[in-house]
Amino acid sequence: MREIVGKAYTELGRELKEAQKAKDVLINAYSRFIGRCLTSLHN
Image (cartoon, rainbow, N blue to C red; front, side):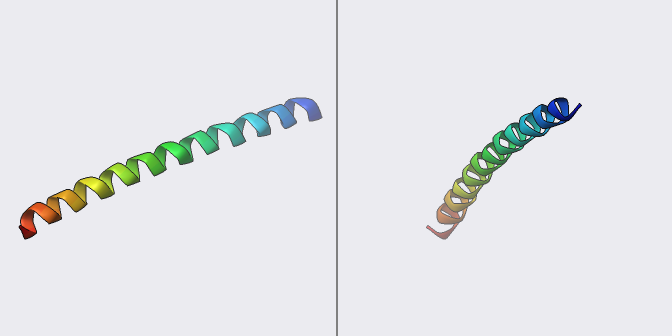
């Protein structure tokens, strides 16, 4: 039982890390997009 829980916890940790990386990529892309929009409005 302990082994099953440990494996599940490890897998959950991996998936959380992947989700956080994906979130960071999306936030960076959104930030660049907004920056370009604001720059084009300013010019």
